[in-house]
Length: 120
Image 1 (tube, one colour):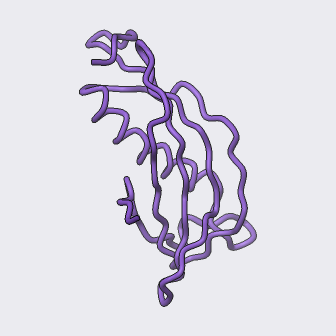
Image 2 (tube, helix red, strand yellow; image 1 turned 45 degrees about the horizontal axis):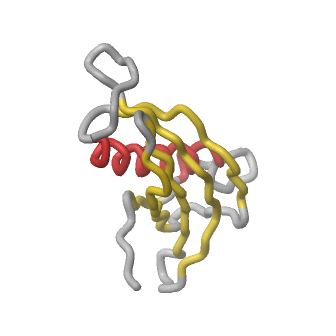
């Protein structure tokens, strides 16, 4: 089965922490951006992140690694969308990918006044 990433980018030197690995906050932000794209498409309008649960880092990401974020909607509520989000890395000269982290993100659909609205 081939799945398409919600977002894909290369990890750059500016994204590193004091140890020289990619900063976990950068990775979390990338996951939020990718998941937000999917949630907004499903909600057919603006969404806001309201929760992120269960994030665990399995492997470090290095400068130059390709990072792909995959999302799967697991629940659609009246005003919310919950999804499983995974981040995978691939060394720039290799084909094999490795999962580096995952989390559950929850978004709420917003109306024009920034208040929760029903998800279509």
